[in-house]
Length: 193
Picture (spheres, rainbow, N blue to C red):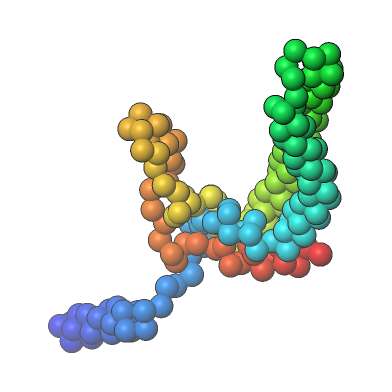
């Protein structure tokens, strides 16, 4: 019996030593909770990135046109400064400049609101796909749950009250790298062409 205990102790030590020597992170066992880096999934999801780029390309022309209009208004302001402020021509030009400025601001606000709405719609669609991929990986591997891991690049606000609010919203403080399945989820997302 004594030899059996000694042999068992040696086997346990050898198993622990092999893990330490190899430095390997073993995959999460079935029935555990695993984690996904949501931002990395989005960054490495080709379909979502292509849609974001297409949206940026579509809107860039409109935003450039708005900037050109703003530049023309700045030029008109310069011309107006050189005019006699008491003349009828000055009052007419100032009225046209103010009207064009209000129209430009309204157009800019509308364009930015539309751009933001399209961007959010695209992100919601991408996040749903990421969620589906995470669920698929979780089911295949028999995990109990797949959660979003905390963003490692998140910095706390300088204001203590705001920082406290951010910390209170966190549900996970740390994730063991052996329980992160982001690579598996990204691989599944790359198949979505």
